[in-house]
Amino acid sequence: MPLFNWGKKKNIAEEKAMIANEMQMLMVKLLFDKEPVWQDAILEQELVRNFPLFSSTDISGKDSDRSRQYFFRNYMVHYTEGDLPAQGTIFKPEKPFSQDTLTHAYRQAWHWHAAQEVGATCTHELMVTDLMALPLPYRDRVIYFQKFLSAVVKAMKPQALYFTSSDKLIDPAEYLKQIEEHGFENLYALLNVRLYNVTGSGMLMDSIGMHALGLPDFQIQFSEKDPGQIAGLLYSYAQYIYDYGSVIEDGNTVEGIEQGSRWKCIYSGAAVDPKRSVIDVKPSAT
Image 1 (cartoon, rainbow, N blue to C red):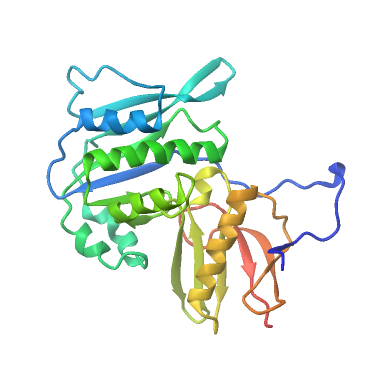
Image 2: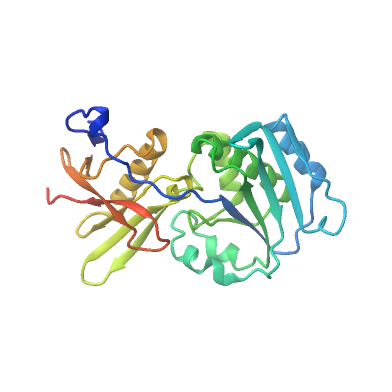
């Protein structure tokens, strides 16, 4: 059975604007239980495996202990003023690491049972971000960023990873395993599904992470349904949007849990922060 019910075909003049979000930088915190030491030689070896044309800035001088910047000429970004290579940065934040930044992620770490135990040991962080890359097609951006990040993780060996756009705390070993088994385009770390109790109204689950790529996330409010099944649907819906783009119109339907059920999609704002555009899926009674 198809996931989406497209209804009648429309000509170009009838096409509607699809729901979208403003793209954001991809940002990951590498968390350590002691002061991290730069492993430049190992990192460059790992980067060469993924980026034959990569280069780096001169890191001598006052900032050599705080940041690194790399240029990936395999991924050229087109601007009106000219073309620039996609870039990646690693830097030590000015402010000391605070456990407060992980409080919400701990509550939603269904995928990693040791998340809080490991995270609580961390006292230092490095930030890894993409740079000058927003105009890239989002799938190219995901591939190049995860090529960069996986090289950094292998070289620097953090105790945990925190993906800010998906509000997700990750075991580094599991992250590298997912990359090895499913490739650089897998969404294991970039996509999260969260669960909330809504007083007097059952539960709400949402996906988070696709908004950073300019795509919509999803949310479903429900009662008397299995949260595990709802989570599976949200992952499937998000993967579909990632594979095909923002192609769901306001009012389209998606397949629900029950055989033959069709659940209506409504464009909406997110019920839970961060503020973003979502597709609110309305479960049918059957």
